[in-house]
Length: 406
Image (cartoon, rainbow, N blue to C red; front, side):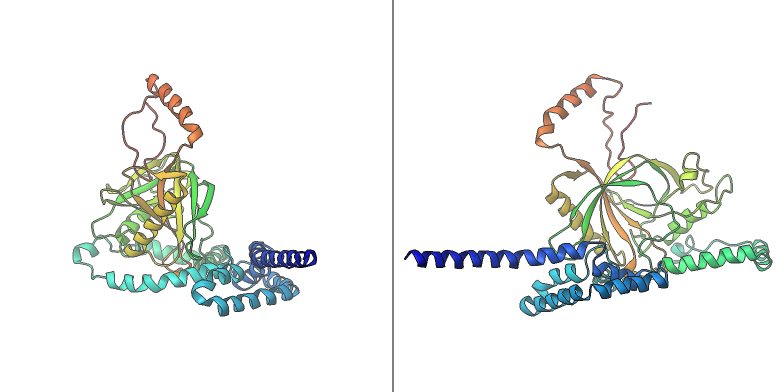
């Protein structure tokens, strides 16, 4: 009996070890796949990065070849996983193992999957514009004399020709980039991130703390949507302000992202971020519809998504973001607040690589240990008339900072 018990204990211990190995093996593989020096990211960079040289590509491919044993093993595990679990249950591990987050291939897959819904939605929403809608959207007239003089200067100036060629190359590359290069963006700090859902393609939520910045903003007409379905007239009007339609005839650099806000009452606005060089003392717009505003520091929850911005896609992303914020429990949306969609790319960018973001202004929720401290601080603020609350609501992307009494 004693020998039998020893045998049973040995077999049990062996089974436990084997089970632990079965559980640990995929975890180790996925951890290796996330490393910046893993074969997956090296291969992705070698094949899909448009900013590296031929020599760099060859060097990366050589390193991938050196990791051929590990690559073959990972691919074999992915194939076996699909055979055993099927596409439905097996694809999350396969995606994370072969196309980990942060790779261009993974982003392309997410974008192409999203387009399956977005393209039919876009075509179903297209409607012919009326004459009244076409009039404000008409292109700005160019002075023929200015055009001719600029062309003449370009023909005789080699430095301008080189500069133009460089810009054309940059624009061509930007059409393949998720985030364009050469454009200024508002400064922010990433506070933390968390999963937006349990699915392999659900993405992440990023909590950002934005520094103050300045925008040019206008209210959109009723037809315009918070995406590619409308907004052409507003875009051209704001662009004309940046390109010289102001009291100084000053030309400012283009920036990103273009922001479109849907307020709680349904009002739609579009905004361009002003370059930091012009933010302190911006020129006055020549158009009454364009307003220049200072945006205060604020905390924003952001969920990125690829593809085309349709009303249906915005609703899916908004619901997913609100659900993820609620599940996380560390922040909550401001009461009465709307949401914003941020778009980073030109119309020439390939659709599945478009960078779009759904953003809502949030506030941190106090932890249980902080409730008493927060109550004490509130008592101090109320007792001090110089810093007492004004009672005015803070509800939007533009209106979420600390109010200072003048």
